[in-house]
Image (cartoon, rainbow, N blue to C red; front, side, top):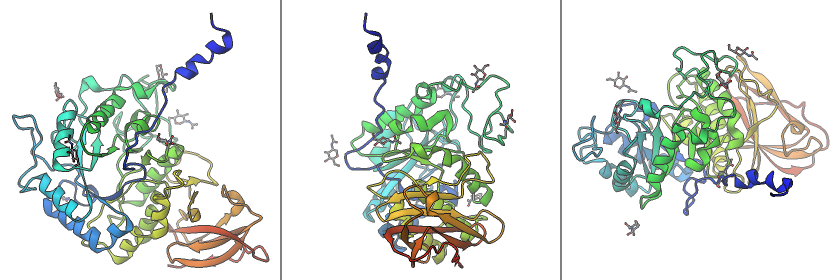
Amino acid sequence: MLPSFLSSLIPLLALPAVNGLTSDNNIGKLPALGWNSWNAFNCNITEEHFLSAAQKIVDLGLKDAGYEYVNIDDCYSEKERREDHNIYADYNKFPKGIGHTADAIHALGLKFGIYSSAGNYTCAGYPASLGNEERDAATFASWGVDYLKYDNCNVPENWHDECEFCVPDSDNHRPPGSFFPNGTCSNSTGSQCPDDYDWSKSKTAERYRRMRDALQKQNRTIFYSLCEWGEANVHTWGNETGASWRSTGDIMANWPRVLEILNENAKFLDYTDFWGHSDPDMLEVGNGDLTYLEGRSHFALWAAMKSPLLIGTDLTTLSDANVAVLKNKYLLAFNQDDVFGAPAKPFNWDGKFDKDHPPENFAGKFKQGTLVVSLNNSPERAVKTIMWDDVPALSGKKGYKVKEVWSDQDWGCHTGGIAVSVDTHDSVVLVVGSECYASKRDTYGIKSYVV
Ligand SMILES: *[C@@H]1O[C@H](CO)[C@@H](O)[C@H](O)[C@H]1NC(C)=O
Ligand SMILES: *[C@@H]1O[C@H](CO)[C@@H](O)[C@H](O)[C@H]1NC(C)=O
Ligand SMILES: *[C@@H]1O[C@H](CO)[C@@H](O)[C@H](O)[C@H]1NC(C)=O
Ligand SMILES: *[C@@H]1O[C@H](CO)[C@@H](O)[C@H](O)[C@H]1NC(C)=O
Ligand SMILES: *[C@@H]1O[C@H](CO)[C@@H](O)[C@H](O)[C@H]1NC(C)=O
Ligand SMILES: *[C@@H]1O[C@H](CO)[C@@H](O)[C@H](O)[C@H]1NC(C)=O
């Protein structure tokens, strides 16, 4: 018989060490920066789209700013595997094969990504990799793939989880038409797994581990991006499985959807650090109904949450102003900081699930100081007051040098806090830097922040 204090320790000691997936060459340590075809072109892709995007990434200075991946999304292959069971490029879209596209992108000093799904078919109905993980991982490696986005469509019945997980997202169609106004799902049919269910043992987790293991067997480091829409409590096993994991359903190029995703992803920021990033989906800057100010708020919030930053727009028509947003050196420096791995986190937030009123204020540390993002989500211009005492790591008794990020202007020394007039749906973004001395509190000298 063990002494009771020891036996009570054993279950703790027996817990598996939860180590995140790492690589020797730091790939996957920081959020991915790049471009993906889906938000701009959906299925309407040809090799030319990727060669043009890659060239634009170089010409617009996005490569110098850190963007490196050029990623093909769904719809690049023939509709069925061939007799040798392999996936083949659709030669109408990629006349010289995917390997040729990859070579051309590599020749520009960029990296190349591809797409598949942990099901029988992709979301658009092309062959996917469940049951063919090693075969497809080897194909991808032979093409020169550096990044895999792995979707969650067309999962056959025998791979369904034994019970359901609640993703309170308007894009969650299970059961059809469901909507979750307060962040809970109805369990009236008893289909939801108990709260203490271990999702790392679910079939969903297993489907994603299979591809992880297949990628690990390749003689190539392939960034592994899980796209399973926040299901199966992925934030609890994503870190040991891949480099990033989607936390919600798909983004769309409109402001209400950006807010809804922001609200959902904000719950998972304690699970993001080096080597593992909660992913609120690719960028819509430059697309659809988003205004310039909404687009830059979206970018600032995604960068602050240490989201992967995958540009999703047609770079041949993107405005200079939006290019400048995507190249913002402070936001990219925060997102890619190699000393501080944690994202900016909400402050002055009640934590309530409300898709129309996500947290508006975020702060986090990086090498240059503290990054503060404050969104004005009201329908009119408003004064956003940021008190240093409300920001973790800052003190209300101290003065700090403040830099405004969009204009790259020094705003001088501020004690106590700062108040800024911000347009509707815009965000003020500050780098609160070194301590300084200001003779009196200047919180009430409102900075008029005009675009
Ligand atoms: C993810 O795993 C990495 C590598 O083991 C670890 O450094 C990091 O802290 C983990 N992330 C979280 C949020 O625990
Ligand atoms: C793709 O092509 C289809 C058919 O021509 C068209 O309806 C759709 O709008 C296109 N989508 C995009 C994003 O260009
Ligand atoms: C999925 O593929 C497997 C073999 O890889 C096959 O046994 C199964 O019938 C397929 N299911 C569906 C629904 O297509
Ligand atoms: C949340 O919504 C569910 C379903 O509509 C409802 O049963 C539950 O009472 C609500 N909870 C709160 C705290 O409002
Ligand atoms: C849903 O109902 C089932 C059956 O009553 C129960 O076992 C499960 O714990 C419930 N799940 C949640 C999240 O309440
Ligand atoms: C693995 O890749 C490296 C670099 O590309 C190459 O030098 C090496 O020969 C490869 N090893 C195998 C076993 O293919």
